Length: 283
Image (cartoon, rainbow, N blue to C red; front, side, top):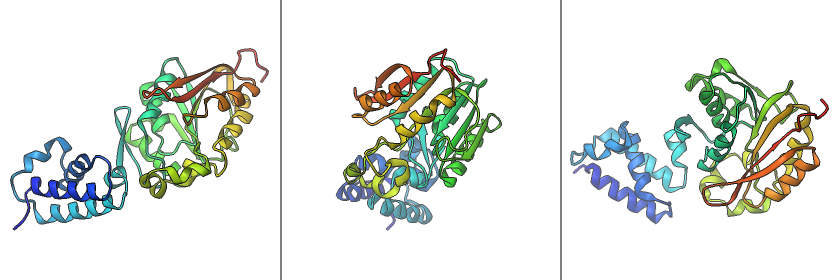
């Protein structure tokens, strides 16, 4: 006898809980909605009817993948960020809620031309352009796959006419100056990688997570090149790991940046370093 939606979700929840998946009930509900191709809020509407065989088969496949810790976002093919849905894959870092702190800081002051270093899915750059219709931007990433993913998200959110995306190793192929530069670079130290969840460690690109060293390599590169690409008075916003505020601030101070502040996330941990290039710096 075929299962009802409620029975299937109960069994899936138990299976995911046994596999150590955090919040198994939520994942079971989201994946059933995806299998049935309906909104998650409507899952209960298909109970107590028996699940169609095709839906049940898709659901079983999704639960099997989640049980081996494939991220839900990869199974759904998207992740919500700042009120918008972004297409994601294992080629890019999953957009995370704490990155919204950087978005809020960027939007707190005007900007017209923004550079996103290591843009990944494009969630930062696309969001900023969607929120500021008068702005234009450039996004760069060393990964060709990431550039393609970001381009797709730019089209999805209708900002493609105001954005350029190119493959570049940080500033290597960047020309011109910007009044806002943003980045969420790889900041996890190599020795910290083993402590990450299986979802992150096994399914997200290492190049977006770690520099293979102490976690500060990207910040050193950005600090070294920022003065040549930031307009005098322009702002730099960097997402950081919760223990890196002092070290990153020191790198930016040595590079001639001023007004350096560190913003906390909602848990009170250091999350974003803000700085600007003094208005009278030599070009």
